Length: 233
Image 1 (cartoon, rainbow, N blue to C red):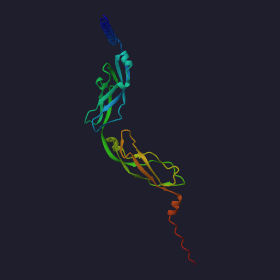
Image 2: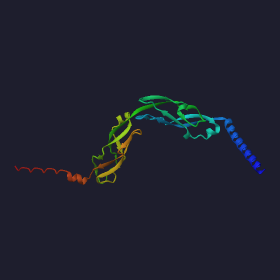
Image 3: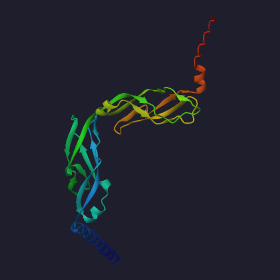
Image 4: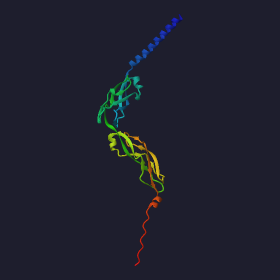
């Protein structure tokens, strides 16, 4: 008898759980739809050797789904992916549709703003570029900075081909002369003037700045020739 009661109790518990699950599933289906606009990050998938110049970082995506689902939707769950065409360089227009939006399966895309973006595509290139030191401040004791030397004098950079063609040189982080009266030697970072141009190697160089002090200049100055004696008449 006790065994039979226990079995009936288990059956009733299973039935209760089934009704509980059915209720919430039905509630989810009956839930009114809701919409929300999310600033979605744009991810570019270029083929090897191709770069996007000044890409658009985000677009507005309007999404529709169950009210609770939309309210709990995080922006990190939505991403716009653009797969770039191969062997095409220059300015192109790319049309965005729901197929470009990564999002949860139970959420639909209503619209994308803008739904057309203009991109500039370029080939990736690599070249050696000279380095120019950035000297700031004034030396002490009247010392005068002379022509600086760098080791190495050039670095390898990579970036869009069109940007590298316009790049004459890259600079260093500041080398401060303030308070120095003798020769300066510092290892400093090489800085890129363009976010799309990357320093490959080396990322640091050694800058040596000779300082000419007034007493050194006086010692190296050639003596003036003595005046010739006057002849007596």
